[in-house]
Image 1 (cartoon, helix red, strand yellow):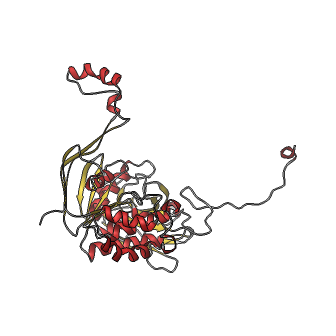
Image 2 (tube, one colour):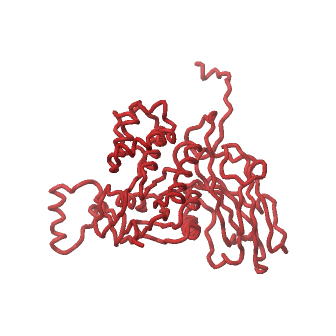
Image 3 (cartoon, helix red, strand yellow):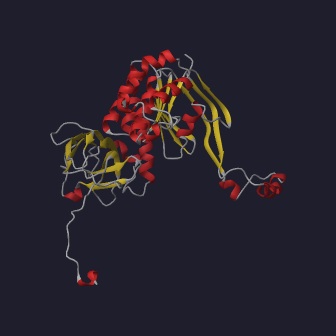
Amino acid sequence: MEPVIRFERVSKHYRLGGTPTLRESLGALPRRLLGRSGSGDNDSRELWALRDVDLQLYAGETLGIIGPNGAGKTTCLKLIAQITKPTSGRVVVKGRVSSLIELGAGFHPDLTGRENIYLNGAILGMRRRELDSLFDSIVAFAELERFIDTPVKRYSSGMYARLGFAVAAHVSPDILLVDEVLSVGDAAFQKRCYEKVWELVHHEGRSVIMVSHGFGYIRALCTRVMWLANGQIQMVGAPDDVIRAYESSVFSRTTGLPFALSQSAEEQVQIVGVTLLDAQGRPCELYAPQDPVTIRIAYQRSPAVASLTFAVGVMRDDTLNCYTSYADECGFALPEDALGGVVEARYDALRLMPGAYRMYVTALSSDEKRTVYTYRTAGFHVTSEDSLDIRHGSFYNIPRWRLATPTWEEIT
């Protein structure tokens, strides 16, 4: 079977700061004549977004691309969408590509939603008859019936997002490119996006490449995952294996986290499962800012492990560590002779701002060394509330306001 997407030693180079002036070019001439590559300020202008990337994607596959900001993830999508060309190597794409690299990109602000649907479809090579048959489905998915004949420059960002996704997902693409789309909009819109991508992959056999920091979506939708860093492939494989390797890398170098994984000790303790429960004790991945959550941890350990405790905490999807709690420091101790079992940790309230998070559970020694044996993570989302009066930050904590009597100094 021929792949629908093929990268052959693809590299992409950018020059930062624009084209050098004549004076800068003349100043660099002696170094070039001596056979020296640019250095100093010129080096700071160079950026290799991708280096020697080889990639193949087959029909019906869903590939997730993960990695830190600036790793080259979006550059991959832009090359596939032919928004930009590779500096070296070759990109081969077979089939109609619909891209969600930036929702609403390509919309003409002075045209109505209706006109932009037909414009975008025409750009993708669709005929008027095809678009007529899809029009009602697109509008219903975006929930913009009342505003479809309004110029899109009057749309809110959420309306833009809904229309952009609806158009891209309904134009029968052979290949769908998705860049962080499933992390925007409200919870209901995210659910519809997720279900539409699932339908495209599992019922229509489309190929999807998804870039996301939301690992819950990556795990649920992707058949393979590629980890990029500094423009180079670090690992390609099964979603759980690649995500675990990436998270381990992040944990070991993030100063905000109080531990790093010890690979030599990993086989001595196993966290068999981590489940997040709601107030009624049911598995749950969607919470309100003040909801309680219980973390249920099933574990096994070797008899050689003399001391064991757990740490639980919350990390935002951009790797910001929100808070961490140690079981032994909270007065809880595991039975010394127990080689396995289940423990639970409960937060009476999450107190988190809306967004995507990961609950991490770490098994570590309770002695002074704090040897980390292993860890597991579980993704969840915090939804917005109509009464939410905070717009920025990580933690949900609204102060109490009252009128106070001014002092004499304040009056005078």
